[in-house]
Figure 1 (tube, rainbow, N blue to C red):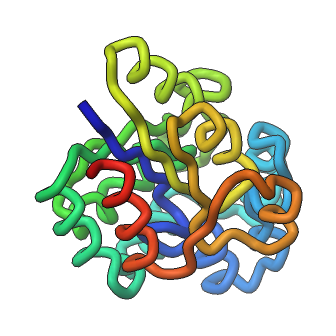
Figure 2 (figure 1 turned 180 degrees about the vertical axis):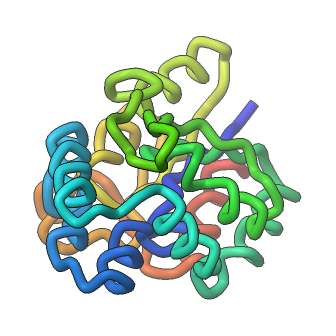
Length: 200
């Protein structure tokens, strides 16, 4: 059996933290895993900014509800789900993801959890597991599945390397140059073509 594992932000939907940065005018929140490879370091930095600026979860959720899937992403997902199995492996959080999952017709999602106080302050985060994307692919392998994976950032690299076939999607050239063995696609039709070759 063959399975496709996709990152969420940057592949199917806009980068949530960049959208928050644009809404609030806080440039520091534009940093993503394309800039900082250590996800815990990046999140702790973000939470410090939220505390400093007094930004609570409901404000972030308001931004998320205003977002739509990337152009062509919904058609891509619909086509893909007719042809194979799809799982979203994301470092986002369940408290962020629901409005976007609804707009993508609820594909299966494995992600993380925020620790939120009663007043809406985000006080921490709980990772599903360290290097969870890679370990999810390894678990699918243990079930006898063959896995195609795609993502756009440093935190996707181990997932792409663990997969039977890994491919970057619209990744910065600097990241692609570091990992030349991994292929790349710039559009959803190109990505779909790569997937179809794998599942054929």
